[in-house]
Amino acid sequence: MFKHKQETNLSSERLEYLKSKKRRKVSVLVTQIVILVVFFAQWEILARLNIVDSFITSQPSRIVNTIINLYREGQLFHHIGITCWETVVGFVAGTVLGTLIAVVLWWSEFLSKVLEPYLVILNSLPKIALGPIFIVWFGAGTTSIIIIALAISIVVSILEVLNGFMATDEEQIKLVKTFGASRFQVFTKVVFPANLPVIINSLKVNVGLSWVGVIVGEFLVSKSGLGYLIVYGGQVFKLDLVMASVIILCIAAGIMYQAVVLLQKVLIKKHI
Image 1 (cartoon, rainbow, N blue to C red):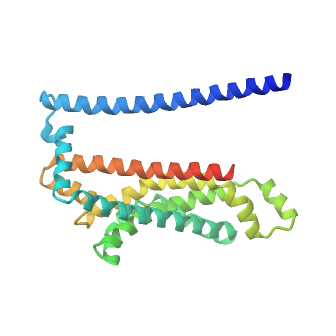
Image 2: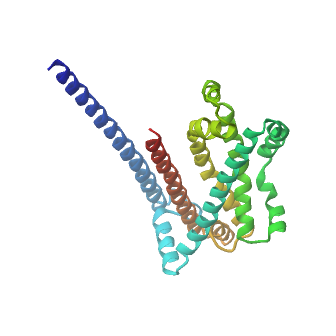
Image 3: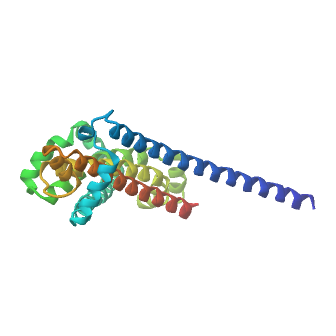
């Protein structure tokens, strides 16, 4: 009877903890929404009162009208689709290739030592400066834009994932080796599962890097996409178009980041 009562108390405490955690999440979300609403409301009010120059800063109502006009002209989803496609391809390619190269470098200590200084130099090099070279090599089109996004994210992926592999608990590795595990089994049973959080963090970093690479590429060569709209709007002083493109870009990047967070939750549940 005492045992049953103790279990009931524990379960109620657990339930209260879950409720408080849920309330905290809701309060955080509500606060974030309030901050966003207040920001746009103040922006609109200051523009209408001519306290800020709406020609230079634009204003929310004009941005909304610009987005509506782009939709009516059939351009909105065309430009969004192109930029999102280029970003997703660059993001996936950068992450997958970066992780595979990290695996190879973990597998071969000799190769890792040889390539380490080159990776450090490539990581410190502003990859945007290579944009014109990629354009000459791969042509002024989608391929060059994807390559730029890939170049920006791949080195970061290699270094971050490789550092995670190298920092894996040596005691766990020794344990499986005592049972006769091969190097492949050590990797698949210990190293890779232990570094899933590292790979997820690499995905989160690559979301932002991929968007940067694609937008820079579109600045240089594209005739469509959100980056093109930003450049075009700046050239003809259509700040409404520039701000509308930036806001759409923020929304798209946020959705992509949340997709990675959802993937993280799925993987955590699967490995619990």
